[in-house]
Image (cartoon, rainbow, N blue to C red; front, side, top):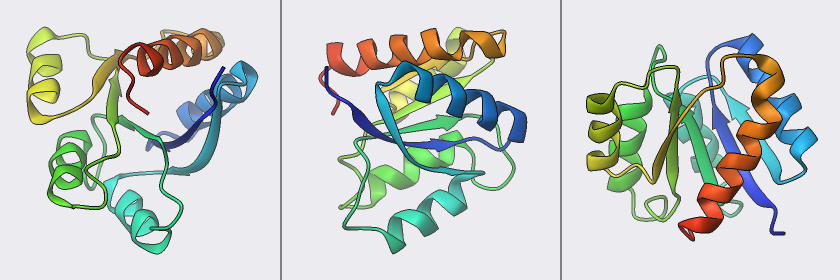
Length: 135
């Protein structure tokens, strides 16, 4: 099974910890870096343009550059627009999901209710990436 190189954009420290534990436990992803918001993401991408990830998983609602802005800005940059962006959020409101997808997000996944559900969340994300041949 292919292991994907992943950047996680998440502003909540607890959520970062739970995500890291779940993704590492799944064994399906190599977390390249975790950043707190979109401006940090683009700083990292600009400094590491020779080591781009297979995928970006971004929270939707964050201070600084949020998930909507990340989707828009990724698609404006010739070198980065090939990187699929999957949005994650606690919101399952269909209009929000539709807006993300219409803006060019490669997918939208709802965050788990509990930290113990992040390994299964990572497995579902891996299935989505493989199914849609995103990376």
